Structure formats: structure tokens, C-alpha cells
Length: 91
View (spheres, rainbow, N blue to C red):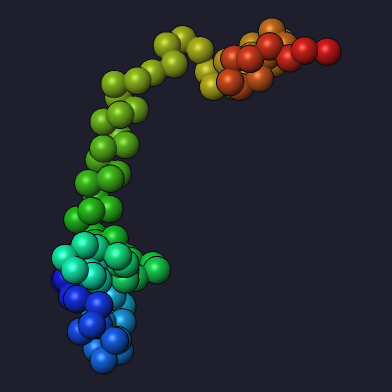
């Protein structure tokens, strides 16, 4: 929903209700967006959650650690004296 700033003030409570119900409200001034109202905790729809889980499952199928375990890779990095970012530790 898009509304001009001059129209937003008298409609504030209606706009807050819209944002609470998941509608993103853009407030404009002279045609330029200047603010957005959106819900703090917009619950994800069941379909979006299912899609996200499926995407994570597909990602894990395409990317593997090979014969290594996550713990072995972590320990190897520690023994090499590097951080998790691959930057050597200077002592």
C-alpha cells in the first residue's frame, strides 16, 4: 500500500492496523518514498516455511563434506593455527 505523507497522518491508526495484518505501507512525499511501516514479527506462511525447508534440504544434497566430518574439519583448522576465516593467528 502506498500513501502520501499528507494523507498518512489522519489515517495513522488504520495504517498501523494494516501493518499489523502483514501489509507493508509505503509513505511518500512528492512521489518519493520516505518511510515504510511493516510488521515487526511477520509470521511466515506455511507454504513459505515448507519452501525454505525444501531449499535447505536441496542445498545439503548438493554440498557435502566428502569423507570428513564437521568436527574433523573444525579440529584441523584449530591445529593449523588459523581462525575460522582462514586468517593466520599472529603471536
